[in-house]
Length: 168
Image 1 (cartoon, rainbow, N blue to C red):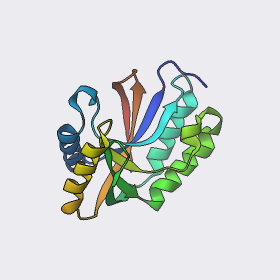
Image 2: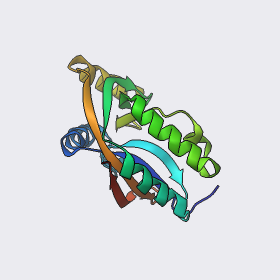
Image 3: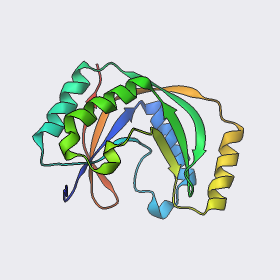
Image 4: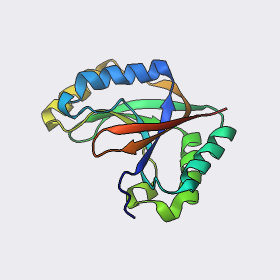
């Protein structure tokens, strides 16, 4: 399926956690490529012209309680670094939306969710390894709240904010 400016769905983080990850991203992400705030992507390519996308997000958010996400470790992504996250509840939410949207999903969005927050990407393997070592030395796993969903329109690099959907 091809959509000119597809939608991206992310988990909405609370302000404190968002600020923490944004600061790390500002420090470690190459500035010429850093168009976005830190984010945990749930779906990468949804059709903007499908009303069912918006209604399903609204319905889900209206009945979903806030989620707790375990931030368990810092991992290499090859040419970058990310915080790996785990949450059985988030997986359930993702699986439910996958089933509802199956006919619209690209192969990447049909896969099992690998929840993570990228704070560095598109750097040399050596730079990424140094960042991983630096951040891992003082890392302690923590829990962060997921307070809703955020919908974005992909603009070929930058994203345009469409709407936020708060959980109960």
